[in-house]
Amino acid sequence: MLPSEKYFGKFEAVFLFYGAMPTGVTVSETGRIFICFPKWGDDVKFTVAEIVSGTLQPYPSLDANVVSPSNITTSFVSVQSVVADGKGTLWVLDTGAPNFSEPIKGGAKLVAVDLNSNTIRRVYTFTEDVVLPTTYLNDVRVDFRVGKAGYAYITDSSSRGPGAIIVVDLETGYAWRRLNGANSTSPDRFFLPKVEGKILMNRNKDGSASPFRLASDGIAISPDGKILYFCPLSSRHLYSISTDALRDRTIPDMNLLSHVKYWGEKGASDGMITDAKGNVYAGDYENNSIRKILPNGIMETIAHDPRILWPDTFSIGPDQYLYFIVNQLHRQARFHYGDDLRQKPYSLLRMKIDEPPAPTFW
Image (cartoon, rainbow, N blue to C red; front, side, top):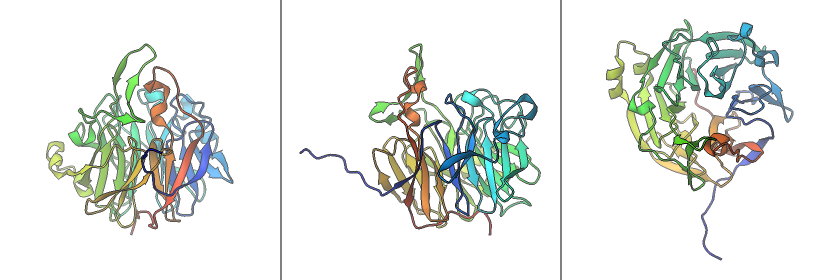
């Protein structure tokens, strides 16, 4: 018997998906689990769902998931991320861009859903200088300790335009772009991703190919709300910035670059999340792994398993488990000349970390 690679980390399956491919998961303070399914070519019957008694139910209703020209701003077009804030609201980030198209006017939005009444409470839309024709809204974090109603921070993970962090004043709805096109929010030009032993590239049906390039994607916020961690999808690097600096519009974007801190390589990550002690959890999709980055910068691998086939979004539940979506994103047809290599089921997994999520309020 020859020696073989060692795998480690104890996790369990929470839910298996035999239909459309999920990207996002979040667990509310009461333990409710929400999932999102962006419209990337699968048969998506509803783009936001709740897991109820072992089944997927459209959330907050089927009507909210049915789009027509008359209700673009009040219904979900193609949702990339869902985030429960720990105080009764589900934040739904709608790309408004099915199949990575240019965002439909009024379709790209941040929606606040009241988890007590299961109704949409407020919709935040964006001006054309915030959501660009190239914008792909990817992930969001909220903090209620600043401003009158709090702030949201959103990553733009564009594949053909500038990456950025979008800052939203949740009282006024006013939003603006920060670190627009900066190195820290842009794909690493020298990054060559390798997944399952093969180079990951865009490979089209006509035989043409191009580099896999996606901008700022993963995002996490410190327990006190003062530090925002972020990373481009096409990169192995981790960055952070003071949220005070992000919100301070008197600091020009050029000067804002000096506020960015580089934390080193953590592996190539999709989603990230922070626990109440300030530890950042991040996937490493090249190595089927999950990393833990301590506040002092020390990094450790807490799970490494061949079944962790593209760890996507992370969430920490009140049960002190780390929940994460595994969706084989790299096996999609667009990376394999039109051949879909994904094998169902996709999965929602969890592992015990014995820490609660980072709070969003005092």
